[in-house]
Image (tube, rainbow, N blue to C red):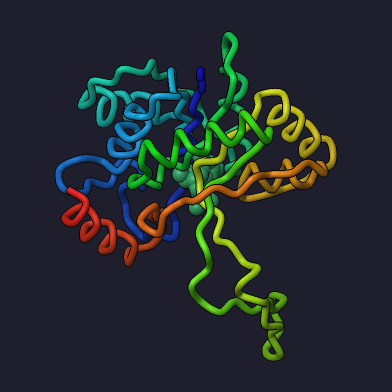
Length: 230
Ligand code: C5P
């Protein structure tokens, strides 16, 4: 398998309430993005990685992240965009050569394993599109913004928390982004763009440890996970 990984890491990180941007926050001596890229590098399916960083942070990423790592996979850095989907689209523009699968993994998910990455890539080869997911643990209710009461309870057994990695046949991913751009579709992940186009997405087993480091509480959780996972 010949997969190219795209790593959106160009978020502003406002929910983290820190001066340092999220990919460069240091956990046990290394920026978060170092853990993410090292995990991707261990996946047998991945031959190269395209990282989307905030415009102007390209040198920061080279200095603080890439220089610390000895990666087998080739890495290229591109400027991200305003929304996550813009960052992924910019990275898609840097794809060169043939690949079987494009795998997308959030820079803010440092605890992904090579098993999850390879499993998701293999599922995309078979189904065209696949995403890691875990069963929802909380009861979830839907309520429109601005409404004060009467949330609608949703059947928990039907709900899945969608993670990354997500993997796609390159033609399907390119078509989904084109369809989204033409139709003004916005989504917080790429599997939603494929579903919006009417195509199926396979769910594969993710992991509860595969957290997205988003808030200060997640940093505490991440420190604890680093101690237990080693
Ligand atoms: O904002 P969200 O939590 O959905 O971010 C998920 C991932 O997308 C993060 O790794 C973040 O850095 C990235 N992102 C991006 N470009 C943006 C916004 C988010 O690459 N404009």
